[in-house]
Image (cartoon, rainbow, N blue to C red; front, side, top):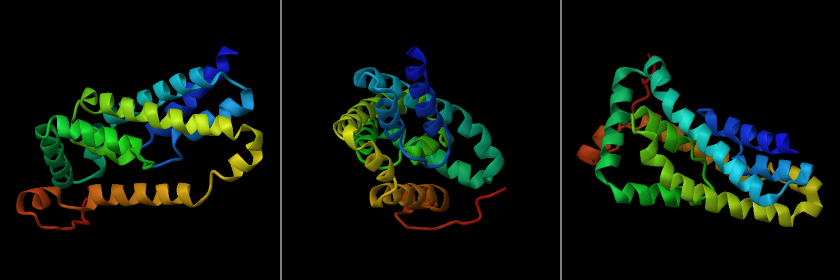
Length: 197
């Protein structure tokens, strides 16, 4: 039924629209594909589209709330980081692509891009390629494990998912608490914990 695919889109968007790391969208795709016996390729395309929509919306609203949550110097610091990302050109796109292929949460990447006022089209093309490849591999592996649905659902909370959550939280802490301007200009690590308004 068409609403099953709409559910894949909505759930994939929902996990990627929030500004903190949640389980990756491919876990939602795998579960819904198995539960509803959906066409795997439509699930992949629909899920990746939902994920892209979620990340796009995240980059649009995060600049509006970051000004209310973080002090001006932290916002300026992240904008400087975004400016440096723009200067790197194709290298930045390559880094985003490689990062999207890794089993790491991409939430910090989009929060940094949004806070730095990078246009979504600057981040999303490389993210789309990496996301499509990595989610395709993950969903195909999920399809392969379809006979073990019970074990698959239980296996979502394992050392890899916990490690991914911890790494995502550490990346967010690095984004928020490192003084990036000092780091990039003076090559010196400086932590700043007074970032809230």
